[in-house]
Each structure stands twice: as C-alpha cells, then as structure tokens.
Length: 390
Image (cartoon, rainbow, N blue to C red):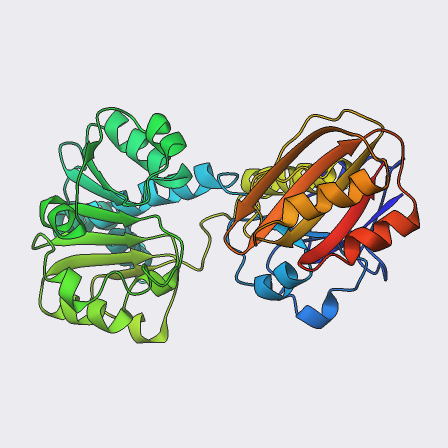
C-alpha cells in the first residue's frame, strides 16, 4: 500500500485516479511515499525519510525545495501544459482588454448610479461611447516570447483570429517546434521581435537568463505604443522599467497576472489576481496529470515531467526492478552492474539517463534481491538512493 500526503485542496477528479486498493491518501500521513500539492510552500523539514517523490499540480515549482530533494534522490514532478488552455484563454482576453475600452467603459457605466431615467441613460451612452473606442486585433502583429505549451497555443489562436504571429525562443525544443503552426515567423533575437510587435506576450520560466528579461534596455526596442502582456512569471519583467516605459509613452499598456504595489493605479496598467490557471478544468487537468506521474513512478519507477531528474521510461520485464539514483560521475553504471554480477544477478533490461549532476537507472533483473545486496549497492560511492519495485 502506497501512502500519499496531500497539501491544499486537490481536485477530486485527480484524487480518484488513486486506486483504493493500492493507495492511502491523506493530508496527515506521517510516513508518505509521495506528496501532492499545489501552492503550499513546502519546507525541507516537512519531507520525511519515507518520501520518494513530490508532485505539484501546476507548472511552477518555486514552492518546493528542489535542491534538497535532489540531494536525497527525491523526484519532483510538475504538470506542464495541463493548464495551458486556461492561460491561453486569459491571454486572449487580455489582448481584447488592451485593444478596446472595455474596462473603462464598464467602469463608466457602473459609475452612473444617480441616473434613473432609462431614456436619459441611453442618450448619455450614445454620446459618451466614442470615448471608449478601440481597435480590432485582426491584422495586428503578436510577438510570442517563449514557444512552449502555452506559447504555441496562444500563437495558434491568434492566427485563427487573423493576427500575424512572430515568435522568439532560443531554447525551442524539437517537440515544441513540431507543435508550432508553420505560419508563425521565427525571429532570431528579442529586440527584433519587440520592434515588430503590436502585442508582446511572455511565456517563459524564471531562470537566470530570463529574470528581468524585459528591462529598460530591452523596452527601448519596443514598437511605440505596443502592449506588453505577462502571464508567465512576475520576475521576468522589471516593474520600474515598465512604469518608466508607460510614462514615456513607449508602451501603451502593461497587462499582467501579477499585481505589484508599484503598479497599482498607474495609467495603462491592467492587473489580475494571478488567475491564469484558475479554472475548474485546469485544476482537474493538473491534478490528474500529477497523480498519473506519481503512480507511474511509485509503481514502475518511470519518470516523466520531472524538474530535477531525466525522463526515464522502461517497459517492465523480468521479475524485479531496481530504481537507482546516483551522482552523474564516471564509472557509476559499471560499478552498479559489477555489484549485481558479483551476486549472480542477471540483468534482463535496463536504461540509464542523466541530467546535470544527477543520473537515474531502471534495471530489470531475474529473481529478487535481498537486503545484503541492497546494502552493497547503497554503499557504492556516488549512490543517492536505491529502490526495489516488485
């Protein structure tokens, strides 16, 4: 019986994926095999010695102590793409809000509390509606920075709405490139994209290379009157630079899902309370994906969508499977296989993958292993963790 400890409120649709014959799911388990959470800020001392994996029902994992997990061989999963449609739809709404006087018009209407005569109100609206005239997004150019799961969906939707779409992503994967519509024009550098775009939408993770990617220097390349959308991460944009750009008239709007005190009340700013993935469907999708990844790892050792370990998938064969995490240093695999050979253990199938400083092995063997063999494997210098899956 596997034990799962949950934090936050997890979608019932996802929790139902845990079979009651194999899983015990609770928010107060003291010795869990896995943890499942959303926004809970997990501390290293909350992760007991029994924990093998942690799954976040969402894309970001800045609320999980990943370095501490990696040192202990704990696999951390996220759910990229599960909330992509929800974010895509909000980005579309943001473009429309930035093009038309929708918010301003609604605020004006809601402010007419003293006007009680329907005919007078109708006449007033007809006279004032010119103040809220906007533009259509059809024919405008959208610059998509980051062409992953969400960025590619935004690009496709924009094309369907008659927009021209250009994209920039120096880390574009082969898988993402296949997913991208052929009509998207790839741009080689960020300044060129900024100079050509009526709208710029950001879809990047927070890395050293992307932190404050949008700053005073990069904003200088913007097409004058362009509109900046940030539904990725707050840290990608330098708040002071945005305020400056709005004051200088370099950009017309900043529409974001990350409120900041310095942006409240600034002309041209529209802020949402971090609701990009706040739909019932997105929460269901994230929970289901997180649960499936936990199950696949706990039952078979397979790793998909981990932020600290390599993708490692092997069909089951043999009687017993060994899942071994180790430091990515020379001769580790040879040492593991030599230890098995010394104990007359026959390897049926195996896979070895590495990612940065970590490596991971799935080894299917004939027969079984006893504690003495486990002790020998764990004693190999560089081994982080050894797990037997029967």
